[in-house]
Image (cartoon, helix red, strand yellow):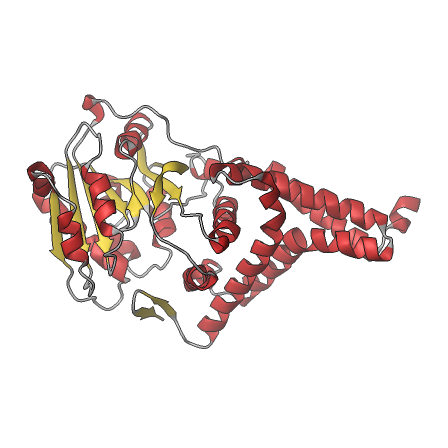
Length: 391
């Protein structure tokens, strides 16, 4: 009783933060371990069904060539057909995609088609994917799988083979990779590993990969989908207006079979985030949508972020200034739990452990991005992306 009476309000809040982190570390499916990765062994000839790859591309002249080239040079033992849908680009994206096919056999495997005008009720990306699937099925009717990937993804030569091995051997209807994001600039080093950490917390990979769990998630940059399951789930049409389309597709597909989501270490994104504004625009596009456009959920999220990420370092400083050593000790413990949970994700990005001390700052910035996303929604500004605005 004396110990309880000795706790100041700051110490009580610090204790709550410690309990939150203990719950996250031990009760959130081990999300922080960052241990869900593809095996090193690829598919055999018997497992190598024909695959079609669909790439929606809009104004991606700087990355589409490397993305297409990385697919055409896969060591996959089966047949791979690549379809690029040029979504009304104005920068020479289609020509850059065609130039990536250097050999005659590569030119036979590559199809670059123009996108049709965007109809009402569709997102631009999903409309392009829909067109690409339709074309791919006409040129490769025996394909059982489709690889949905983005125009800035450079695939490791063995990526498709390992994706197929996982899909066939474990009977998965979806195998998806959170590709390695570019992490070079100052802002990328601060915000990109934190983004991956938060994504794993939101969609714990082990629970996604557990067929008995209802948790479903995917990363849209690299998704291998079994076509019969896609058809059973209503196809791309079923999610045509979704802005967070990858996770919406994962929810639909998990009703028709097991899915798998992991981290990539060698397949990577070429997209550059040289300044904070570029990351801000991407996050604000979907952050409030992730909360169901709910002010109540937004409030809960802000309270959680303040307690779990911001308070521990604040408690340390406050405790030192007020000689509240219990608050200091609890603040340090909460900060340590946060840092230790962040270490495995930092290791994926070959970053030193001391970078974990910056996670509270990254959390503060992502909280501000989410608030800005809500502001844009309430002001009717919609979500802008690739020259289009989605209300």
